[in-house]
Length: 98
Image 1 (cartoon, rainbow, N blue to C red):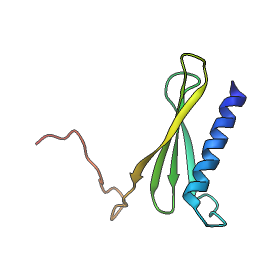
Image 2 (image 1 turned 90 degrees about the vertical axis):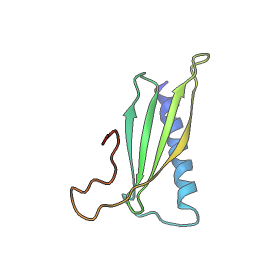
Image 3 (image 1 turned 45 degrees about the vertical axis):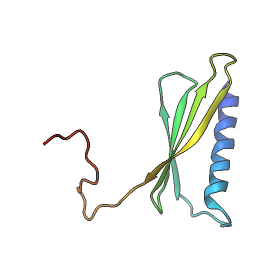
C-alpha cells in the first residue's frame, strides 16, 4: 500500500507542476513547497502546496475507497495569499462579533 501511495503522490505532484509551470523550462529551486497534512486515517492525507513566489495555494486531497481500498482524490485551488504591510498585520479575521 505504501508503494501505491507514494506513486499516486508522485504522479499527482508531477502533473500539478506540469500544469502550473506551463511553458516555462526551468522552475526556481524552492519555489513550490509542500507539506503533508494527516486527516485521521492512515491511508488518507492531504498535501498543502504553496507557490512561494506568487502566493498561490493548492490542496491535494486523497481518500481511500471503502469498497476496494484504492486511493482517489483531487487537487483544489485554495486562493492566493495577500501580503501584509508590516510584520504582525492581521490580513484575515473570522468569528468576531461586534
